[in-house]
Length: 127
Image (tube, rainbow, N blue to C red):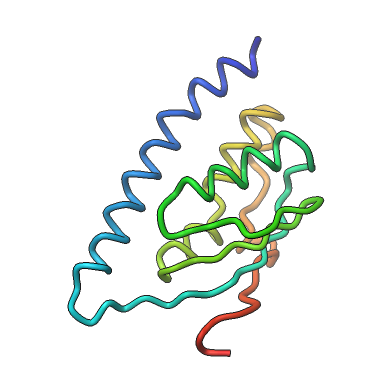
């Protein structure tokens, strides 16, 4: 029952992240120069496999500018279209929110992928 309540709190947060990402991607697309930087990023999350990892991967994919290509164990391979999307992924907001939903408030205090040095660019135009 408590997980359902935490999930109900997560939905508005996810919707807000989707709106923010829509605005960021739209702004980039509407610029004449279209400054996109597609990259593949590997993130080692602190979410165990199964339903929590699936929820995280799907939440990332729902957010415009990102697409989860592969999710195995605790590792995600994510395609990002713009640098802002990649930075949001490194900051780990969605990961913290998913940890809160499935594991409680204490697990939301785990550092972000950037702080843990658990995120790296593995492919893109610059490589």
